[in-house]
Image (cartoon, rainbow, N blue to C red):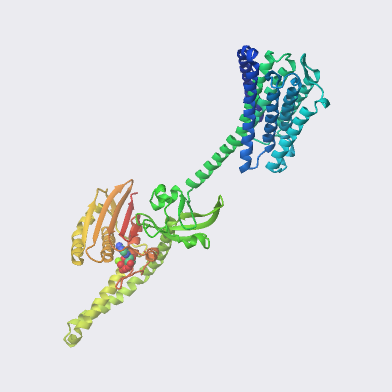
Length: 601
Ligand code: ADP
Ligand code: MG
């Protein structure tokens, strides 16, 4: 149904255009007729030369396009043959008077040969001949030789061809041949309609239009009596108009249509590349970025324009570390390799990268496709961490008290011995023993706060108050270590929390921050509120956390410090979990920021 209405729409459009062309041709002929009668030689020559220019141009379009892609050259050769016969027709036209008298007939023969060639090549272009891969130069030579042979025969052996025109007018044979040619055009239309023409629909429209106009044009040449006849003018003007549509058909088929197709595929590629949720980059084998998509540019934090044409392996380019080594571009391909890349802001992201070499216009390039898996791995790590915490928590709950009880007994006896005179000489050792026991006890206390189901009492209050009350202690600590501590406290609403636990989390994080900075470091405590969550962050300007430590962070007993327990952060994670909060961290060579995000229920 749709196809049918489409065809109807096409037919109507073609008919309207056809009617317009004929009306305009008739009007132009009326205007031109008086001048034609006075100086038909000049006007005929001008009209014919216009047609010749158009058919030569059509030939050139097809010829040039055939240089870069496989084309239907038959049509092009047709236009060339037509141009050759049209030139001869114009040259020998009796009205021009170059060859007086006897050439009435010759010019008509060239004319008919031109029309015949036109119709013949059109029909050929709908047959499987177009699929023969004849060499373009051979085809050109054949066309020129064949049309010149016919032309020579007409000229040198006029006796063997019947006479078509006499000074009295056209002979019935000429009319018959014109009708044959008209039938050939109709046959061509038929074949196009049957789908035998191999170019696109937009071409067909012009082709059909042009071919239909040939019919009234040919008819004009069957009914005229003298060369100054009105039908002679009309026929020539119609001829220009159908040549014009042939040219349009050729330009549409060989230039506009392929160009549109190219544009669409370019558009498709552009969208697939730039809107791809994966990061994509095309580089030269030596690492010059040819193009990169928005996703990649966004991740590294530089604009596309800035990235393009810079080599990311150049030494002076320290802005971004793409994570990909140059040898991995030319050597073995990467396949879902997990690498670390560093963004402009110094943030480290984990990416999964695959590379492949691609050929574009015979030049080798490398296609890099990467996915940012930082969040995914972070989630996985979190899950693993909580699993681990759960196990440790259960152990803590189970054995923590059992260990602590005997220790309390031992510590009690030690204190008693410390006061006895007979142990005075062991005073120092006993002191050390007590200290060590205290240390062990504090570790167990921390260990106990890892217990999963530890009952903590939540009270409503404001975290800003906890920070303020803890600040003098933190300041004293900072002073002792030669650091500074600042606050940037912005309003946050009241929440439910356990003060002791929040104090512990703050102490642990700030202590870690102090310990990460060599000397005269700065720590900033910040709070803010947005969209249902409270942010509490602690930033230091220490040396950052190496990736291999980040990966294990929060697992009990992971420490890089000589006297560290590796329990500080696990406790923080556990407390965060109990408070419906999340811990995020951003770390780099310029320092680390731990973010505590409390989600308000
Ligand atoms: P501990 O402090 O006893 O080592 P934690 O669980 O508190 O144990 O911390 C574990 C490890 O994480 C530390 O040893 C340190 O390497 C690293 N770390 C934690 N916080 C920071 C920080 N702010 N800057 C640098 N490294 C840190
Ligand atoms: Mg610590």
